[in-house]
Structures are given as structure tokens and as C-alpha cells.
Image 1 (cartoon, rainbow, N blue to C red):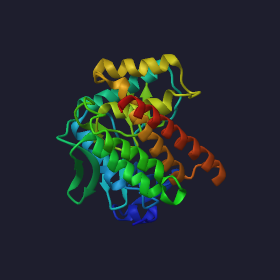
Image 2 (image 1 turned 180 degrees about the horizontal axis):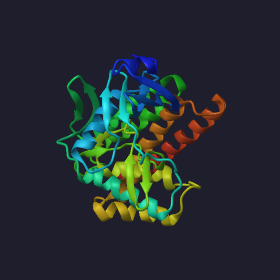
Image 3 (image 1 turned 90 degrees about the horizontal axis):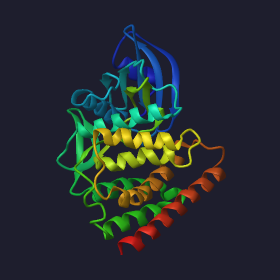
Image 4 (image 1 turned 60 degrees about the vertical axis):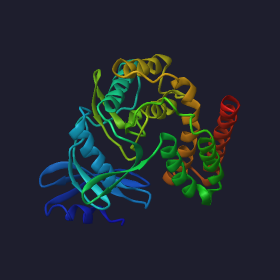
Length: 308
């Protein structure tokens, strides 16, 4: 179901006002609103791939089970969630060593303070958060990649996702030693983390959350933030890792598994590229997609030479 924001708000309160649209990139739209005199944020599904209801339940879980600061959820509907306005929400994505260290510490805190019996992908129902579990971490990543493969079929890149799935299925022990299942943010970038001084003030955008090895979350944050980014420095990259490992050590063999995660992330980047449609033209998107696909295949070639 995809509704207008006013219909979502009307299902929760009689007294509401839409102030402004904060963000409108598929599969979600985000609005600043006033509800019963309170400043709030409404995150609404704008594409069938969106699932703000599950994200709202994840925010409730994080607030209940961890010390990580997140907005307080006021309501969860079939296709939206409503949360109190949080003054600590991110406004400046600029990175320096102090900010990077704080981000690393809080990501590790999220991992250290959560624990699950198995890995898996999240869903939600009327009773709350549900984990669609998988027997191994590699199988959870295959399930994530299968969703990407199906989405990418019309764009001509399903085969790349299938190749990464095949590698993980052919090498079931490649992720052995990756660590116990914890809650992963899934897209822990500077745009999603507010920092005040040397402390994280608020974490948002849990729409990609899943349960798996914390080292995947670390790589998913570090690669787009520090690999070739003009917004970061070598000092910031080192500070991020120092901050993380001050709270929770990365597992033995972590550096050997980084390329496995990078191949997975290349496929998720392909999906995001075509889903968000944040490009100047389809031809420009296709060029970027070709680069992601080529990198995934290069990475897989290197992995095969290492593990076969």
C-alpha cells in the first residue's frame, strides 16, 4: 500500500499539519510534521520496495535494547512510521577524525549490545518485529542478493548478483569465523549519524538493517565513506577503526573477508542506483552500473584465486 502522507497522519491523529518534505528518494518519502502539537517525522513508503513499518519496529528494538540514540517511535502503520523529532539528527556529513571515531564507537556499541540466535532478514507484522532467519551467515547474504537479483533483472544486471550468490554457495566456509549474529544497521553512513562534539547524538535510516556479522556492517560503512571519498581523510579512516575496536574487536581473519563483502556490496549498490534513480540520465546510470558490475567481477576473480 502506498498512501499520501496526510492519510497516514490521519490514521494516527486528528490534529496534524504537514510542514515540509525533507526527503523524497524511492523507496521512501520523509516529511516534517506537527502531530498533536508535537514536532515529528513521518517516513512513508513511496515504492513497493520500501518497508517503513519494519524500520519503525527496528527503531523500537534499538531504543529498547541498546544505548544507541535513535528517534522515539510514536506510531507504526502498514506503510509508514511516525517518530518524534530528534534535535540530534544528522545535519552535516563532513568527516574529521573526531567525528569518525565517534561513529566507529557507536557502530560497535550497536553490535556489542545486541545478540541473536541466527542471522536473517527482518520483517514485521501486527505483533512487531520478525526475523526471517537463515541457518548460516552466507545463506543470509544469498537471500539479500536474491532480492537484488530479482530487482535487477529488467536492468540487465541480474547475472552479477547470481555470480556472487554462486560463489557463496560454492564456498560455504568462506565466512567462517566472522562472528556471532548481531543487529546490523546496513547503511551506516555519515548522512545517517548525528555527532555532537565527540559523541553520537542520533542514528537514523535503519531501512537496510539485518542480522549477521558485525564486520559486514563495518565494511558497508567504511567502503563508501573512506574509499576514494573527497569528504574523508586517512586520519578519519584510522579513527573510525580505532573507535570501533575500542569497543569491540574485529574478528580474526577480517581483512581476508573484506573482498567477499565488497562483492556483495557492489550488487547492493547496483540495486540502489536503479531504485533511487538519483542520476542525470539513464545512460549515466548504466555507465555507473557497468563500473559496479566490473568491480564485482574483478573482486570475484581475485576471491576465486584465493579460495579455490
